[in-house]
Image (cartoon, rainbow, N blue to C red):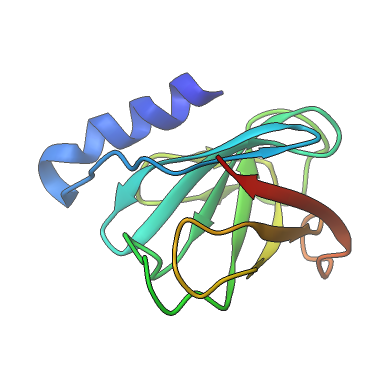
Length: 134
C-alpha cells in the first residue's frame, strides 16, 4: 500500500510540487506516516481498522505545523469493503474502499498526538484510533 501511495506522489512530483514529509505517529494498528503533499493536500499512509492498507487525504493541510485543531478529509484504499463508487485523488491515490475522516489534534503545533475518527463510505466517522507522535 505504501508503495502505491509513494508511486502516486512520485508520479505527480514534477507537476504538483510533492514533497515527502517527516511526521510519524504510532497507534495500536501500526504507524501512521505523513508521506507527502499534493498541491495543498497532505497524504498519510496508515492501516485501517479492518487491517487494510489505506491513505488519508487532508485537504489544505500541506506542511501545517501551527494552528492544528480539527481536520476533515477522506481515507482511500484499493482493498477491503467496497463502496458504491470509486474515490480518486489528484495524486493518483484511488480505490473503491473509502470514507470520511476527522483528525483532532492534542496540541496546536506539530509534532502532536491526535485522535483519528473514521467512517465507511458516506457514513459519519465513528471508529476512533489514537495516534502518538514519535
